[in-house]
Image 1 (cartoon, rainbow, N blue to C red):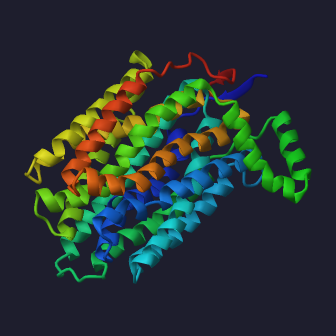
Image 2 (tube, rainbow, N blue to C red; image 1 turned 90 degrees about the vertical axis):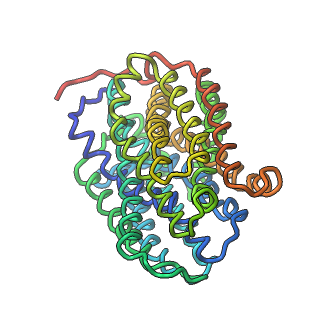
Image 3 (spheres, helix red, strand yellow; image 1 turned 120 degrees about the vertical axis):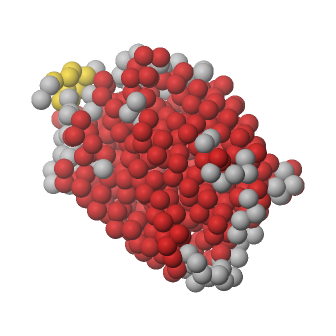
Length: 442
């Protein structure tokens, strides 16, 4: 059956992705501010990986289940994917308002679990939402636009940390207490999380399901409660059994790529405490500058990758970007100047732009419309499983194999990016989408 999707204008695609700004602002705070908060509240460095287990576990459970549920959802008023990322954004907003008020470590760790549930609930159906709306020839633009907002959201989060630390961060650090200047970034995130999602919800209508899809959805609703609870899990298992070989290859790349990224986010603050002899606040501010730099680059190059992938192929651009990210990580521990150490983040930013867009474009072409939600959830399982492995395994690796030295941790991550780049060269891109699509100009 032919699926006809209208071609959207640049600004329609822009409005559709604005909600990603708030989601990624929240993730930006997780990358830069959460681990310093754990350190402020007394966490030892070798405990940072296990304290971050919330992200992998909630992603593994929440994203595929929400994806499968959204595939079987339709409301003429609320749509298919929108109800899920609206609820997720609301949960995320409430957690962001509460987070800087954490009185003790266990409270902050518990809030991270709730925050990750909200963020994962919002993000997974958002990926499917873009694939639902766009014809094949606009998928690259749609997902690279998401990559742009990934950069913008994380940029704003890190930029706010830098500014507030500069303006209000003169107080002496007190053990067991979160500095007041960190509060403001979280409050801004709480506002952005819900308002940007509402913008996209109100500006972008969803495409109604086909008659066959609607019949399947209505049939699902007519079944008993026990069956409806079990159905998402059955959908996930069946989808994994039928999963295209291409996605199994992506899983290999993601294993090393996301393991390495989690190392970077956890140990960049400890690295600067070592290499620049900074306090925790100074190191957190320097890490925020690093993350701000690479996300500025991500914003600038995200859309520029669209013609490059069309000319040279997604896998070549993707693999080369992973090599560049490895070079950046090999360089950072060997630079002792706080300004010069920002230069490698240009390569990191190009890599981040590719990671956030190219794989989703490629996968959207090999999965069917009626299973897009569950497969985007499975793709994100491929992100959180490596993160889960990292949180469970890297603490002992860091303490016993790498000597508890943050420099060695960042170099270790660089090696994993090289391996990911080699595996990316094995990705044979599909020539056409699974869904046969006609493109109509508005």
